Length: 124
Image 1 (cartoon, helix red, strand yellow):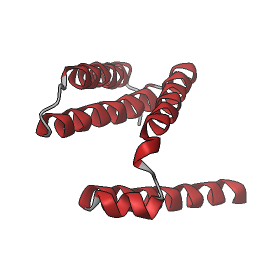
Image 2 (cartoon, one colour):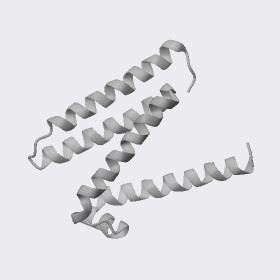
Image 3 (cartoon, one colour):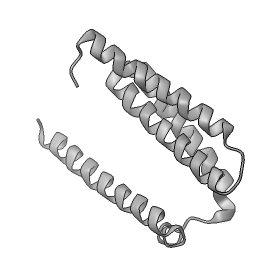
Image 4 (cartoon, one colour):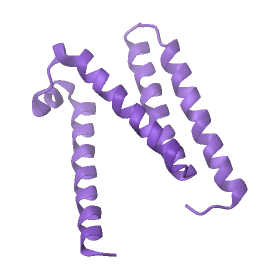
């Protein structure tokens, strides 16, 4: 691997650690997470639009790349997000059916991708 490859992997690890830390802060103390990241509640609709564009790009890149490991990882992550949102809304007494449907749909894609990997003997 080249020096640039090692640098890329190192920075990926650092970015992953930072993102994991932010996830931990938001899970433990959402108000602190909002303050730490300087997110604004009134901007949430625009932030969600941004996120859906990014999710669409990830799904499209997974499709174009065509690697079932990438597809399984991407759609497992989507399923987690949908299920977690469903639980958040359920606890608040809000409708959840669209989140459950999205979660099960994403989970189905992930399971089918994993089954394809097993069936074809592709390595992780």
